[in-house]
Length: 433
Image (cartoon, rainbow, N blue to C red; front, side, top):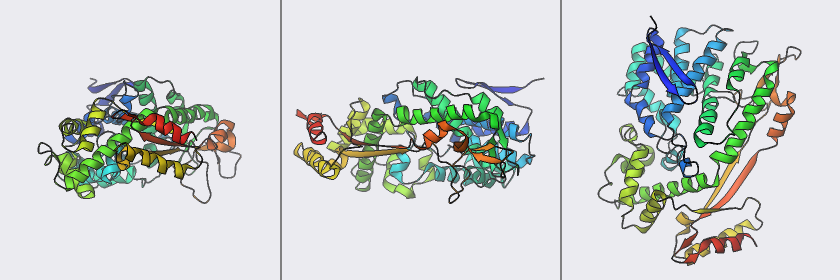
C-alpha cells in the first residue's frame, strides 16, 4: 500500500515523501518543526514585491523545492558512486535546512545585524533545545555536525556539498525557476530536467561535472541566472526599497541602544536584536520574521523620532526613494559632495537620506589554477583531455561571452521631494553635469 505525504508545489508539481521510508519520515518531521515553519513567514525575495507584486513566496516553499531537487541529483549521482546511508541522509537534510537561519526580508536583516544566515543556521542545528537538533540527534548523535559539514562545503566526497552549493546546485536550480514564476518574468526559464539528466561525476568520483552533450542546457541556465540578477534581483525599485529598510533598521538599532524606541516595541525580540547586534540570542532570532518587522513599522510610524517615523511610513505606503544610475558618472566624488549638501539644504540627514548603492554580478568564473575552488566553475567531460574534463568556457562561446559580461551598477538613492523642494530635479542637475 502506497503511503505518501504530498506537497503541492507551483514549480515541481507534486513533491512526494514516503511514509514507509525512515529517512523520508525524518525529513517530514524536520519540515514540521517550529524552526522550519517559521520560514513560511519569511519572503524569499524580501521587498521585491514592491516591484513585482507576485513575489510573495516564502523561504519555506523554496526550501522544500531545494530538498526535492537535491533528492533527485543525489539519486542520479549514486548510480555512479555508492554513498553511505548516513551521508545520503545528511545531504538531504542539508538541502532542506540550508536556509533555516534566514532572517526577515531576505538578506537585509543579516547585513544590519552583522550575523550571516549561515551562522544562524549553524546555531539552530547545534542548539540542543531546537527541535531540529533533537530530531537529527535521535537519528544519529553525529548527524547535526554532518549536516553542517555538507552545508558549509566540507562534504566528503565533495560532490555532496556541491549538490547544495556550487555553480550547479539545487539551491540555484530552484530559486531561478521559482523566482521567475512568482515575479511573472520569463528570464528564469531553463531546462531543469535536461540538466539533471546530464549531471555526472568525474573519473575520481568526487566532483560534479556535466556530460559532453550537456553544454547547451547549461548555457541557457547561466544566461537565465545572468538575466534574473540584472532584471529582478538588482532591479532599481528592489534595491531602493531594500536600502530604505536597511536604513530604517539601523536607525531603530541606534534608538534601541539609547532606550529611545517607542514603549510598545522597546522590549520586543526584534528591538532586542537590533540593540544587541552580534550578541543577539537565538531565542529572539527565532521569534522574528517578516510580520515582526511590519508590526514594528506600524508602531514606529507614530514615533516622535522623525527619521524612524518617516522611513516607516514611506515603506508601509510604498513611497519609495528614487534612483539615478551613476555608474559612469565623471567627477563622482565632487558630485556626491554636492548631492549631500543638497540634502542638508533640504533639512535631511544624508547619512539616512542619500545612499550610494553598488551591486556587482559575475555571471561565470572560469577555472583558475591559482584558485582551483571547485564550486566556482563547471567542468565538462572530455575523454580526450588528459584530465578527463575541460572548463565550460573552453568549449562554449556563449559562456566565454558571459565571463566578459560581469557588471557593476552604481546608483544614487534619495527621496524625490521634501516639503515642496524638488530633490529629483536637483539631483538630475548635479549628476548630469
